[in-house]
Length: 335
Image (tube, rainbow, N blue to C red; front, top):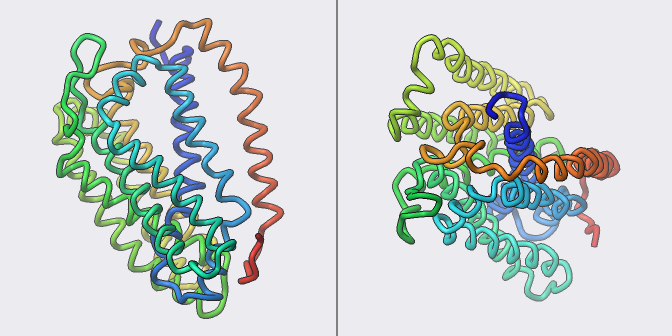
């Protein structure tokens, strides 16, 4: 059965929500690591770390939900995508592990704090870049024959995937800068306003480059964006980007603290919508639809019951954690 309210479609939206939640919550977290070398060692760096110290590990819950949901709900897609993207996915996971170790050890091992700071930045950059490369490689298409991956080990490495990887590094850095605007004050906050302005321009350039290249990867993408009358709907995406851009820079100029972060999140939201416009209803672009890849309905129903219970619980404890640690952050450690 195909439609907009059947089980595979519901699970596609559940996984899309998990990916979006991960980008929202771990994006600024990774962005802080990317920006970390630009902050002064000592109290300034400690303060930057403390803005995410209470919540950083919980943010990665959504990555587990997204990956686990893909394996359980769409096993065929999981079996095709993983062999195609082993290298960037393994690089991402190793970088996240190394970054998490560095986060904790920089507090526990002050004598080698500089080394752990470098490791924290390297892990953040590699993890972010690998996520972008993974997305770019998926979007450009995966060679499939029958029900298996038919490409080579290096098929993921293309100019387009590298462009998406670099763009995601810039975008996460923007999320990190706007997060710090909300969580800090004084000289550090002023520095972040300048960073956010420059990174906002760079992010928009990257979004434009990726958006311009995507429709020409495949005739199906071009049709999805420019076919009449569908173009009347898809044209609203760049229009909304333009509106968010104006609000973003007005917020920076007037010294608003929350609006720049919200507009940075809006950029990513619109990017996810654009991704959906390009590939839906495929889950492996140009090869496998969500209905072809879906697990049996009995399995999807069983898992959906668990998701309906667990996702509100995750949202509740995540929201509570952010509420408890709301407000401006000092440089004293939480550890």
